[in-house]
Length: 155
Image (cartoon, rainbow, N blue to C red; front, side):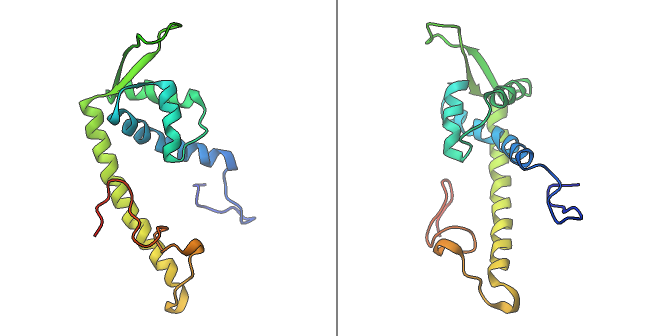
């Protein structure tokens, strides 16, 4: 049963925590790549930076597993850090392949946002063509009038 399907009792077919973990894991790679696009960093500082993207409390093992997988895929590379007095920590940086992968992610996210905006706009019309009032005074896209997202051109 997929995440959007209902069982006979009208409830979703997956446990509450599992769905969030799957969503976080799918979003973790582009978030880490954006942080590394800005500057090289060790795992702990990357975990701290994830809060910027709404991924505030993530299990550190998930972050380090994602970094190992990204390194194996050639999206990032690492070197031993020299700033620590304790055990050496790896410092990660994005590779050329990682930059290309990130650019593809960003384009896919732009297209997905357009599809979501269209769905929200259709929902806002409601049945019979009447506009549904959005909570918080936001438009169908979830944004306030004139609000744009980082990297988005305003019109």
